[in-house]
Image (cartoon, rainbow, N blue to C red; front, side, top):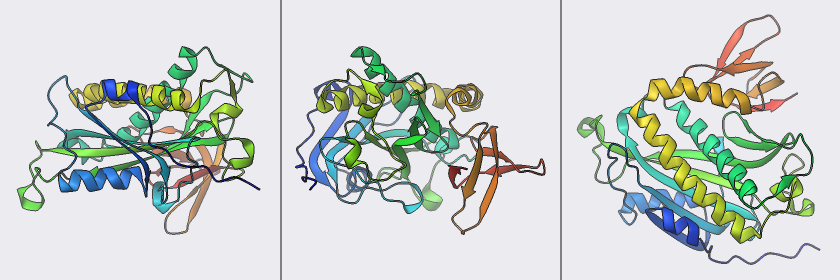
Length: 301
């Protein structure tokens, strides 16, 4: 019989030292939902973006009772084993709503997460058990290891009370993007929620305790969001091209035969070729036609 794990308030000294604001609770329905609620009621505020500076707030919980994934999917996690964090940042409305570049915000979140995980592994002298256990991104929002899902990301745009809406909206206003990041760090094989999921400790030896891992990864994510988003805000088009090359090296789907499942129930099968300039996926069908995929769940065949 599997013993239920008890939730405890996350202890995040390293993260607190670098973040502008940290909210940590033992349990909530969803860290993204809590962050959105607090931004909406004004209990969590972020200063407007300034050139060269970016505030990052963190909302963390040990247990989520209604964790959410992309397209309405559920995110199942275990307290004391899975990191459930949301990172809130202010960026110009003009960038957040520009469909020619805003797809890269999700890709940035993925790259920040890979950097944070790999940095933590290196810091503690840990090492993969097998040479093919490198961390990759499955477009558009999953962290993969050895072909299995280790984590997921969910981004949401929030209009803070201080920002205009409708006809009062100003392109120069800042809006808030909340990036939810769920990571299976210390789950044993018997606790994995699905056969398609995995956990970092199953692929890497020499890792520290879960609490140390969670804090070290979150600290790096705060710094990573701050550094990468400042550059992106300063030059979205230029950074998009650079990010496109960077994602190419860690894109799990690239070169594979995949099936895209759309929200209307239709599917499209083909080879994932790469990403377009707006971060959408290029899928080449058997007849040689390239299709653009912007919103879909993508699975390998």
